Length: 242
Image (cartoon, rainbow, N blue to C red; front, side, top):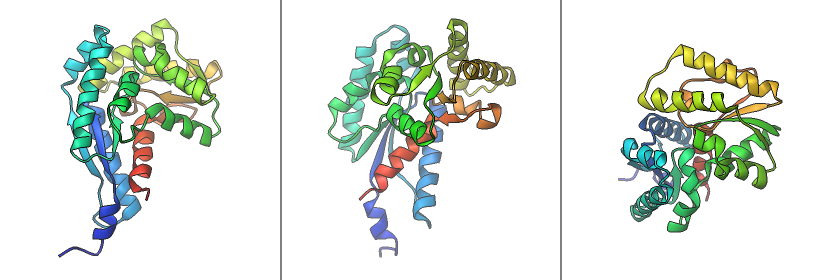
């Protein structure tokens, strides 16, 4: 017999996640999505989620060898499978892999929720116009992410200098993606954040889904934009929309 909340549950859309990039942050997506749905609907409700979790070593190898077309084919094929399994919307659970977001969206008919768009909306809602951006070197140096924030949303973006970019990139891949949290690395990120603030940043975009595992808003004197949480909130809004 169906319970009293069955009709509400049927209206909840299914979220498909291209995850495992890394699994550390994908676990956060799963936790946050379920928590948000439970808060919104109450009772025993939780999110409807389908996750494909990659072996991140294989994805990182494609990144390192600049084989982005192959990466796009890999994620697109999986997105199709998620849609076929019943996903009503797709999330790429990593900022860097949004480099292939347009190809993934072209491969499916359900919406792909773009992490940069969700983050830009959050920035503008908070009245932030000039933002520091931290992430992998692909995200900080590439135009696929920064140009979307500037050209599509009118934000101003500043990034660390070369040494700072290399340091952040190394912390992400050598530590955070492997579940390693070091206080010296937190202090190093704090110094980089302060440098961006000194250059006029009103807030900092944590443009890597692993960075919120290391630094929190209490570690900075300006707002930190947690892209994992922001992305999850945007997905839940769509999942609950009628």
